[in-house]
Image 1: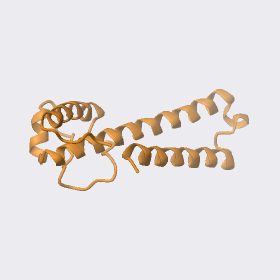
Image 2: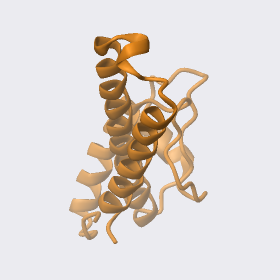
Image 3: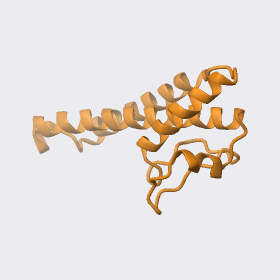
Image 4: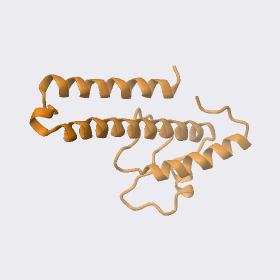
Length: 129
């Protein structure tokens, strides 16, 4: 199963659990909070789920290329000189099942993704699935 499919299933199941819980327990009942707020929270949950799906797929792609190129955490830091002190660069040598949500920005993943994909293509590494 590809990474995109795996995270799509996780995201879809998570959203369905949220929607089922909201419907079952009634905490997003339009009679209690209004139709606009109910719609807003269902859409907000869907957008948060999409964001987490996207960040995890990009993170897995970055870690795949970093491992194939045998890069370390310090090597990755060279691609991102403008990080804040509170932002920690992910370590390709360590196994993480999900992307760091709070301590590493999506912009940093985007920069690493572009640079590592370009370098991997030059070195003939198979594309990420």
